[in-house]
Length: 161
Image 1 (cartoon, rainbow, N blue to C red):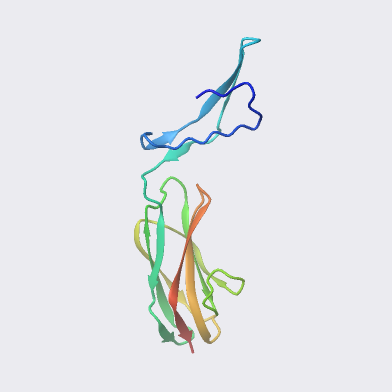
Image 2 (cartoon, rainbow, N blue to C red; image 1 turned 60 degrees about the horizontal axis):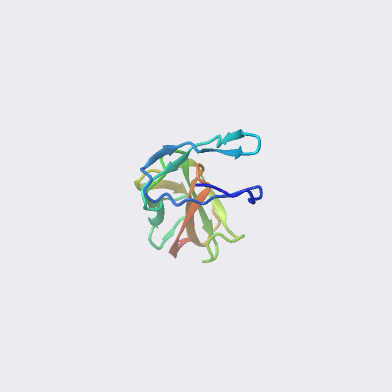
């Protein structure tokens, strides 16, 4: 790939990974000055990883709607697929008194950075510190390597009474 002498810095080149084998790659390049006969070389300090074509997925699957007594433990379940195994990918959970997931009303459930894995996962949540009320559960899977999050929420509510 060649750039003309009229390119300005910074210069970005977007290459689709079509036809590139899956794997880890290190990118480098150079700028050659024909007038002086000198080249300046550079490279990325981190690798890039070309993975399969399926994006990661995260879906909360339980509990179903129900009423729970304060202090009752309930299991929050999820499924995850195409998890990035190259870098840490963590699950975060929350509960919200309204059905609008991920707004300013939410509260986080401390789950100590559960690492995501492909397949089903779960966390047992003790509701002893939760006030009585109706809540909606939500969560996300965050890939620290790519900086991307996949969000999910249960459409049904749970009641603590």
